[in-house]
Each structure stands twice: as structure tokens, then as C-alpha cells.
Image 1 (cartoon, rainbow, N blue to C red):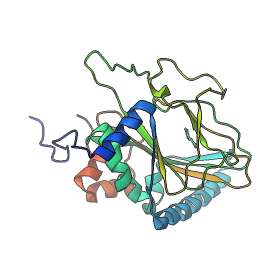
Image 2: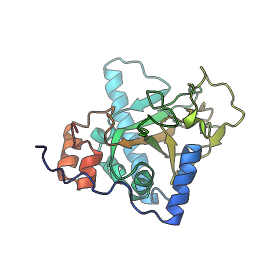
Image 3: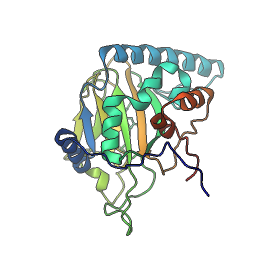
Image 4: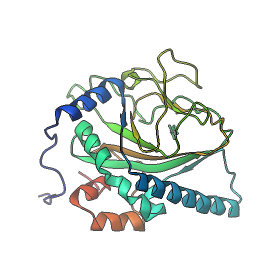
Length: 260
Ligand SMILES: O=C(O)CCC(=O)C(=O)O
């Protein structure tokens, strides 16, 4: 007989307020959503300082290993880097909406960050989700759900490189084109530092070139249905401690259920 699993929510879909329901409807139609007041001013400052310190540390390590440093620095397993990133796991304005869209049984797929240097060129169009999704789901009905949540720590402008999306493309049956050609209905999202931007794992998107003189920093917390496989192992010492000491919801988010 299988063990009882008290951390698995007994209710998959909570009752939503009319306001939350309209945000869910917007996301389902267009594949993105901008969340206001996702961070307080204090949390924003903490993230900026922590990310800067983390990059300095990682950069020194790369230098000492003689590794090539690119114009866009990516760090995976962000939660292992510094405990000050920990609050992002279940940040209330974000997790409330993630659960409203994906249901209550959710876990992290990855926690990463990217610092795009001045002079960095355009990213190519891509989807984060690795496999094709039919908008009608499978004959049985299930549709995998993955939502990336970007906390852009610097105001996005046309100079430093907005995130560019094609609203509604999350349900296109074909892959994005090579490179970064223009789409007639593409949208440049000029996110502000205390906002968060959700984008569907199957939405066509790309980071635009950074033509400014400053770095452009983002933390990306990616959530998905808890039955999907995560990209990151979430098994380092910091995350293990966070999981052991965390609430049932945190345990689930950090992959406490190794197999179903
Ligand atoms: O930085 C951005 O705006 C998008 C990041 C992204 O799509 C990626 O890192 O794959």
C-alpha cells in the first residue's frame, strides 16, 4: 500500500475571486500575464544585491577555471546560491496566481537567473517547454502546464532589451522560426522592477538585444504541474534544508514527492 502523502493538496482547484478569474482567463487566452506589486521595494533591493554578489562570485569561479564568459550570464539552481533567494519559492502574489492557473498541485521546474551584458545580441525565438502540446490536450484531456515567472530587476526599455512575446502563440501547432524575425503581432513587454511577468512554457518568446550601457538582470522561477519532471534536481544542501523545514506547500514545490 502506498504511504499517505499529507503534503498533496486534497483540493486541486480553489474557488477564485472574480478578479483572479479574469487574470486566469487573460493568461489562458494570451499566454502571459503581468503581476503588479509582486515584490516590495525592500525585496527588490535584496534581490538586486544578492544577484550582483552571486554573479561576482560565479564570475570569479569562471575566471579561475579559465572558462569563457559570454555576454549573457546564466545561473541555474539559484536557490543553492544564496538563502536570500528563498522567499521567491512561494512569494504570495505569484504563487496565488500560479495555483489559480495550474491548480494547487504544483512544483518548481527550475530557479534561474540571467544577467544580460551591454552589447548582448537578440535571443532567438524559443519555447521553454520541450515537447509539442496539442491545444486540445490528449484524448483523455490532460494538458501539461508550465509557467515561467520573470522578475526583471531593472526597468525594461527598448534600449536594454525587453522580453518579446507573441501573445497567443502558446497554442500554435508549429515551432517558432529560426532566428528572430518580426511577427506582426509581437509584443515588447516593458516590465517594471516590482512587477513579475508570467509566460506560458509554450509561448514564443525571446530576450531582445541589450543596446544600453547597463546590465539587465532577471530572476526566473518556473512552475509546473507536480506530476511533470523538473529540470533541476533540487537536491543541494540549501534546498534540502528549505524542503525539510518548509511548509507542506514548500515541500511539494521543492519536489518532496520523488515519484508518484
Ligand atoms: O531574458 C529574457 O527576457 C528571456 C529569458 C529567456 O527566455 C531564457 O533565458 O530562455
